[in-house]
Length: 243
Image (cartoon, rainbow, N blue to C red; front, side, top):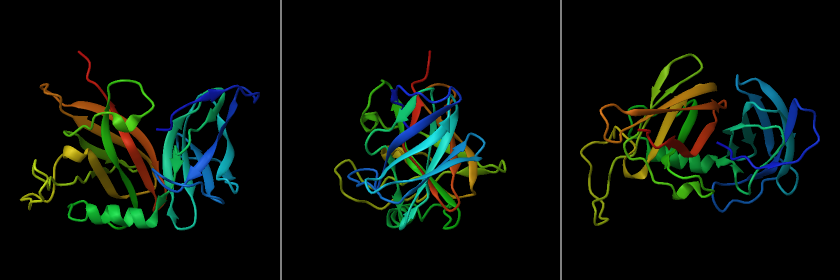
């Protein structure tokens, strides 16, 4: 989910604005000019469209105090979607917070998960890694990975989709070994997951994870899948179970 950083603004109380730049990759990306930025409300209905300038910058209007989705797209990139919550002031994105998934990178991800029974080359892709939110901090990628997560996505038609996971293919010494099970059942040491063949529209994701209790803990995420696009979740955050 997009982090929120607020600054003063003089828009009407019912509206706010999102200001930021679109980058070419999750890490070490560069600003992307002429990218399309489209916002939607929590029902998936279109709100506004903007185009990035030569520095990758954009400004687009949002309804205040509401959940929203933003999809970015551009040449040689797959439509890439994020979720956020708008406040009453301007939403200023941090550098690198909004980025595009390249077609080449998504093809590589498909190849990584291609042995999964749920693999499908058509439709949308939701992929990412599950991390535990134990403290509030800016560097989310230093949070601990969740290795026991099982995920199910429910699309806009109410159909359930099972996630794919990467098999454990290294021993503790780092030497590659053959795995007997090509279809892992939980996130494992990478914390990673992927859904394939998800139709466009709002989608609920149930993340269940085990912390040694008698019952798994469940955490829900709400995303919007673009047509033949992707939802990168780096990370998909879950909370530390309460007492």
